[in-house]
Image 1 (cartoon, rainbow, N blue to C red):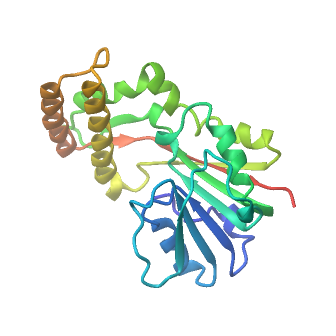
Image 2 (cartoon, rainbow, N blue to C red):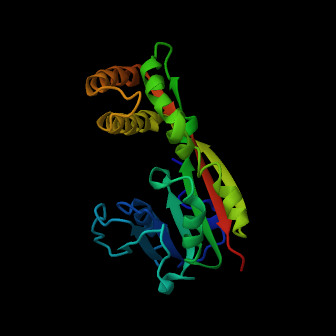
Image 3 (tube, rainbow, N blue to C red):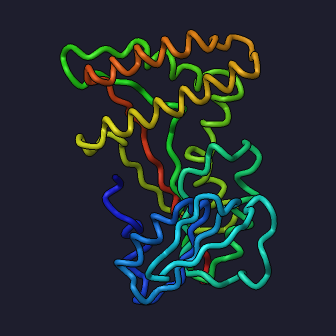
Length: 248
């Protein structure tokens, strides 16, 4: 939990009926949350696939397919007061960040803002939440994200977006929140992180990648990791928000 839906730097200057685009919207949860705060707003969600779109019974948000790695339709240029992007890193290559930013900036009205949130997964840690907590298995599993191309991929975005935004002519603000700030959410975040780590390990095993674990080793690791989470082990990483304001 970040403590806000739109960062105060964005929300404080927003009117009652803004136009907001959500990139990589998934199920549209972000837009549905905004609909309660801005009931008269235009809320549009975009994703590369419609597979996760959910029906909106109140018809407050609309959903469309779009690939932000490609130029976006001219009729969308200059339409939105805010563009929101969150956790896009898994679908990004190191060279994608600047061209994707330039594509989505075309959606903004003059004076509009882009709010882009990315996790520093490459610096994630597994910590002991209780005196008797165990962390060895989870720590070993997370080391897969700290080697070679994987480390390079996940060290981008959160660390590079402010500089790229400035190069694109935006006025930039940044914010950092720790993922473990709300104690009650630590276990769920850690369990979600384990699913991601195991999914990556199985993908590497299926590709017979150098150093990959066997499927049997992964299953054994999963059982040990679950025990560690039950003992109080939890995942911690920083969540970085880069906010860029387009000149008026």
